[in-house]
Image 1: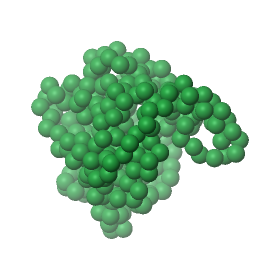
Image 2: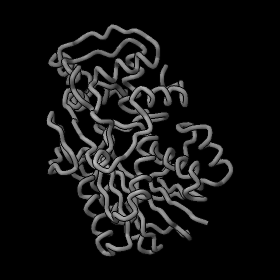
Image 3: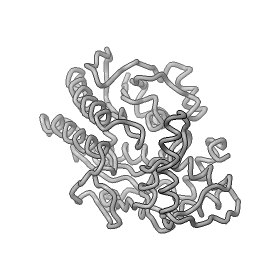
Image 4: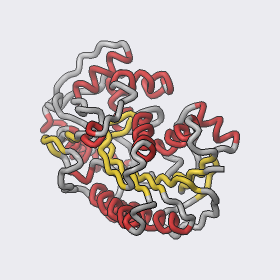
Length: 336
């Protein structure tokens, strides 16, 4: 019986990738290794059925520590375990989790003789830029998250280099990943647009590389399976080109079948407001969306090009509109 273990399997991408592997009969069983338990409320009804039937099994695991999971016939390891939200963590937390996690997972892969690893990195190692960046661009991370992900890539690459002929490593650098249960930036944009409190800050033309979670799952397996002759693949994952903020808003309105007037508020005014509101919200322990870090990110482009996919004939399953419509069908509550 073939088995995949997904570190960070309780997360958004982990749940969707588990379902992808099982729906396509790629493995017979999934071990979801995570520091928190399975949350079927963030995924689809089909995934919930897999969990209830025992096909998806949970194993509590803190990747910052030595991994002692007893498992047989592990044919695939996926490393999705990470601290990633910005803002929200101290700089050392990104490195502690993302670097130690990479080291411990690669060490465990050796102990169970698993020869295939998929690692989700990020576009954060590139740093923000209005210029196009493909996989040949030199990474210039500007945040602790981006720096820790770049270092984690190197740890995985050392593991693969120890047995270049037999070990297969897929490193994917996705833009913002959206879909049912995401609960992040795109979900906030959808809710703000639908409920009439989204506004531009002179950033209509700011490009944000992004991908639908189901497209990401398909591309990761495609890179491992279809490119079997390549033992090490690193690729960017985004729509091509990445949509502008205005294109995000317009497509949300199209899918939701609504019309919205979106005002344009000066960035300087909003940034000043964030400087005032953010410390007060922290003292009051109130979650709010206009932190200075988020304000800066909203006006900087991540213009990432998926050149590897383009050059190797990857066929996208979803257009932007089709992806958002599929998300809405899967989880309508994200759109209210």
